[in-house]
Image (cartoon, rainbow, N blue to C red; front, side, top):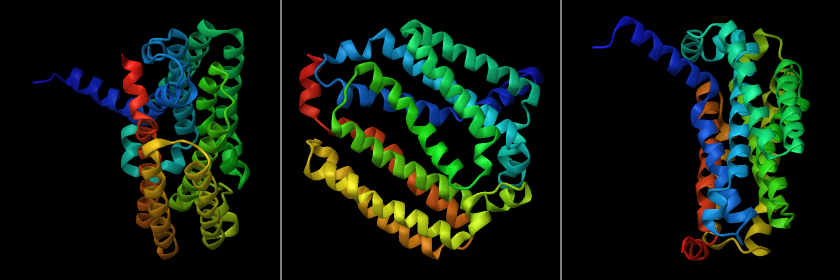
Length: 301
């Protein structure tokens, strides 16, 4: 049997994991490694990429910076989340606001510390990234269009850390990044529809609050249609191996998504739509291994 003190510690631990969204950070770290192995540095031996200490430091710097971002976002949105996610917010509130701020500054310090192992330019990169996350959480997220655009950019930036490190300027990388950016922009708009009740109560000027749900649905539909451009380019202009099955599947999933979107009437429907987009994004991360399976097997030996 666990003691009362141990139970309290476990509750705080799970509360902290809930705040920093440990699952999301793990997926992003895996995505950075898979992107490095299969897209950014396919010419390098597999072991050299995986055991590269500079890459590890960049992934760690990204992970703790993102964790800090989730903390500061949770700090500013605590009242709104109490309306939109009451059960999750009760778990998150086990960790005090003061502890959250202490954790936020500690994680930001660790991000810069890890980046300093790589170079001074990496330190500047992550310092600007940390500032961008804070400014978004404090100010920008309350404004329509700007908040959504900045949120999507901030979500993609960790991949540019490893992209800059490998100095790979192949066009296929920008096409992949465009597809990811469009998906994340759709997710941000869908989250606004999902959280409209709390946004109204806390005076957040999101697109659904200011312009209505119908315009939001039109914008999401436009973004879904826009994904056909990078998908078509990736399927016809670049060698992506068996990952083409992922893009065919994504096209079908996005078509279903749009149909459900226009029938959506309540928060449950928007949560379902949000989860569909999350599934497409996570599936895309693990589908990277399908780009060239034979080449990677050769690189192992």
